[in-house]
Amino acid sequence: MKNSYTLLVAALFLLYVSPVICQDNDQELVQSAIEDYVEALYEVDPSKIEQSVDTSLRKIGYWYDSESNKYKDNLPMTYQQLYDLAGLWNKNGDKAAEDSPKEIVIYEVNDKTATGKLTAEWGIDLFHLAKVNGSWKIMNIIWQSSPQ
Image (cartoon, rainbow, N blue to C red; front, top):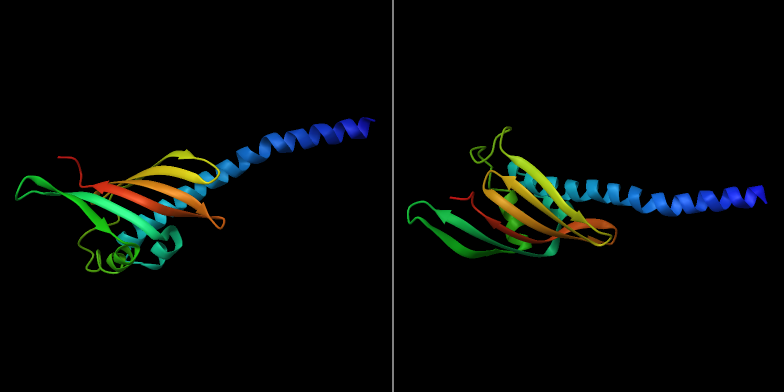
């Protein structure tokens, strides 16, 4: 009887602790996906886009044009355009440096979805991620230049 009670307590403990452990691991994996995204651009490494971004990516943004003092609205980007950009954007090392901002905030991680924010050299990106075949992938990004 004592062994049955011990097994029951152990099973209940594992049921309680397992989701917490998985959630902490998922939090790290979501963080890693967003890090791969920014590092792909900073380090001119498109392979990190392959690791972290789903090919169905939907990305739109708002770039501030200092000459006209207006935002250029709803600038769309596909997965392929992002992949290509990662291979070119900082190619000459003049867009980002070692001290460029790379502040990541994870707002929420669920079992299949997550949200986060990146402050980077170009501005602010907001992310929706999904767990696809066991891996966290960036599905949607909305971004804007640094606030004016």
